[in-house]
Length: 101
Image 1 (spheres, helix red, strand yellow):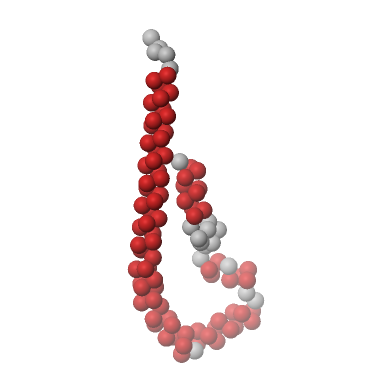
Image 2 (cartoon, helix red, strand yellow):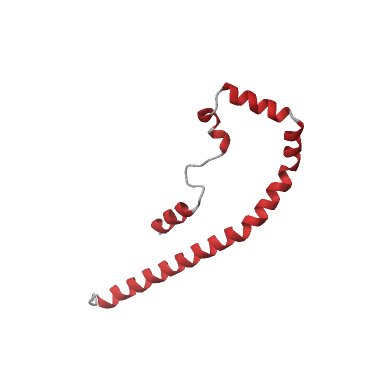
C-alpha cells in the first residue's frame, strides 16, 4: 500500500517538494526582482489581473476537476486490485498451511 501511495504521489506533475511559489522567492530573487514586482503590482494591468484572478482560478479548477476525478478513480481501482490480490494471497497461504490443532 505504501508503494502505491508513493507511486501515486510521484505521478503528480507538481511533485512532492513543490510548495507555494512564495516559499521560493527568497531563493530565486534579489532586491531588483522584488522592486520590479512592486512596480508591476502598482500598474493598472496588475490591478486588472488581480481583479480577474478569482474568475480565472475558478475556470481553471473547473477544467481540472475531471482530470482529478479520473486520477482518483484510477488510484481507487489500483488500490482495490492490490487489496484483492493481498486477500487472495493470504487465503492461499492459509489453505496451504497445515491445521494447527
